[in-house]
Image 1 (cartoon, one colour):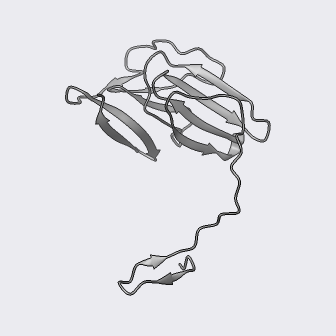
Image 2: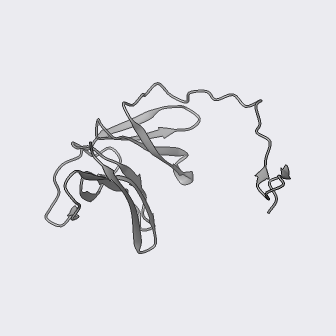
Length: 141
């Protein structure tokens, strides 16, 4: 696959950057530390989190309306598994997020899973594919 551009004498690809693009905000919601965008095409929405506020956001296009769910604790990543729902990774826990419109609450035993992480380490991001979850980690300080 060619990205266009040229190769330098050392074989490094040199690609032009478009400068005619303009980024515009989609909605009014802001974050202390927003991360983990995931596009959900069947809902025309973008899932994203505010790590420090422990919030899961769903921003709908083209309206820009954002539905926000307070998860009650810092969350580092969000990803929808192939079987439906939403998996959140925060602190040292993996947990399913409540269905759209439901409030976050402690679920029945086994609904979240505590993972062994070294002291001072937390999850930073999450991604899933059939049968697996991939989680990033970082120092919490």
